Image (cartoon, rainbow, N blue to C red):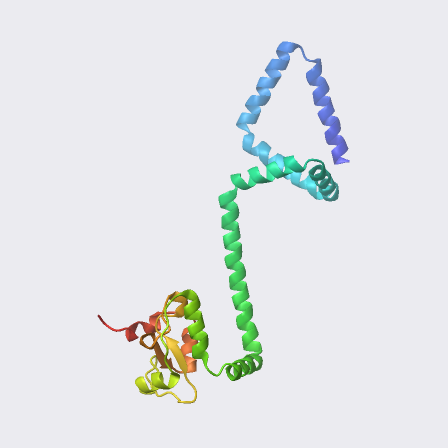
Length: 224
């Protein structure tokens, strides 16, 4: 009903304009331009609202029309998409970065909650992994070699004896049967897998600090 009334009002305005003399038409056009210039923000807001309402009321018809047009005009559609991307590239990239960061935080939070609610599964997984990888030093050597950080062979026993059996983070005694070999400069940050870049640590101390973090290790680096 509203659409019909709007269409009738538009037809009335057109007929009135058509019946005007030529000099009055020019005056009418000029007054329309002046009105638009003075009320541009209000007009654009009204047009946006009207278009939004129309799209909501005719969503399926608009979708079908757009799909039909895209199939009939593939080159125009491609050119439009490229031009739109180039025009809004920075905004789209920022939106993608923010979305990616938000998703990463959500995934980390989900994993943290899952570990807390499935702690027995986590422990079982670690026990199985440790059983299948009795020598984690081999894994560290492979990672360092793949990243080109440099490697030098060593044994867990030699590092334990060199460090006097003390955790380099809390300086307390470590069990000889259960300890971690910790890299002072993490492999992911360019650290070597070599005796001068490793020390022993309690599993709890090492895991509480987190992966790839340096602050807890700074006091251990030699003073030049």
